Amino acid sequence: MYDSMDIGEIDTITTNENLIDIRDKYEYVLSHIKGAINIPYTYLFMMPENYLTKDKKYYLYCDCGTKSRKLCSYLSELGYQVVDLIGGFEHYQPKEEFSD
Image 1 (cartoon, rainbow, N blue to C red):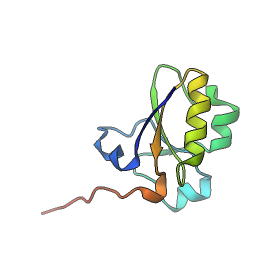
Image 2: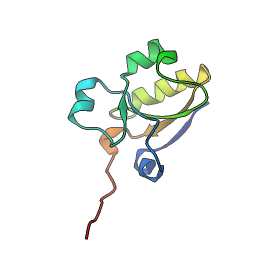
Image 3: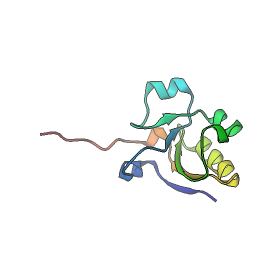
Image 4: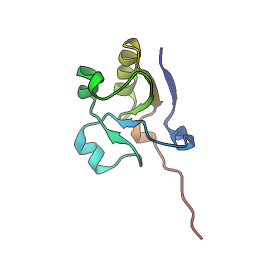
């Protein structure tokens, strides 16, 4: 079983150290959540041990939430601690930063 949270809540996490964008590289290059790293879906599906360790928690998002949900289900069965960010990147709205 894996955890899930609304993608809008990701800004409440103090660090995005383990935030993973599973979309294709070109989508990541166009735009992504600040601090996220890009590890495409197929890489994580085929070789998770090359990218993840079982002692850390990872937050995964895709474009609309379908692929991240499937991947989180799969990875959790393998013993990884993963959180599915519901809604995906298309529903992400960064917290506005105000400056004086």
